Image 1 (cartoon, rainbow, N blue to C red):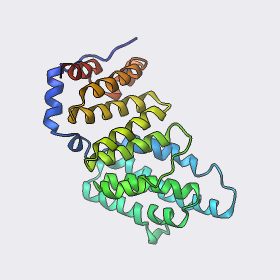
Image 2 (spheres, rainbow, N blue to C red):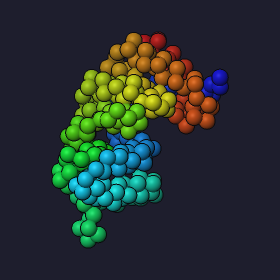
Image 3 (cartoon, rainbow, N blue to C red):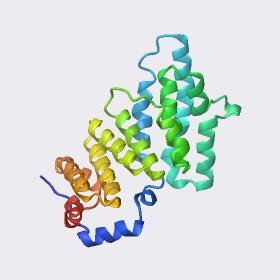
Length: 247
């Protein structure tokens, strides 16, 4: 089994962690573009799975336009100024009357009993996280009713956990991120979530618990090909384990 190249020693990683001062700083925006795109791309299918009546079909149609805005924004985020991104996320939340596009907030309110309305809560929460408004993010992420799927719902749980962490509700953050890791049917999502939860635990001086989660992450990482390992972490998971073991 291929291993990740050891790019940093444990002391160097420790210095990196210390420089961040706290998990909340490190994960200020919390959800990476990759996770948001994962939810947007896979979650889109959720809103079309049970279009059994006119209301469901209308909700799905309204959602498709707003969802496309999210996909386009996330794809171009690295090239956009922060001020423009804020405008884009605000438009996604409130809609664009000029183009007859409803925002996630209105869709969530008007179609609350539909799959589209449920998913709109998730997207609204993600928009607020990207706008650095974790309190608002929590409000909508908590409204999202997780399904039995093993891709979107786990990512949504991790998103909610990151929102809790941004509010310094660290115990709730760890619990929710772990739930996402356990539910996910994806090695990358599970490993990354366990690492995030472990880093929170380290900031709380709960090193034995952090060590356990790092070891769980390693079980997933060791099963990945080397390219997936590098993309996930770019650090030697063994160094994380060594750091937690020495405290």
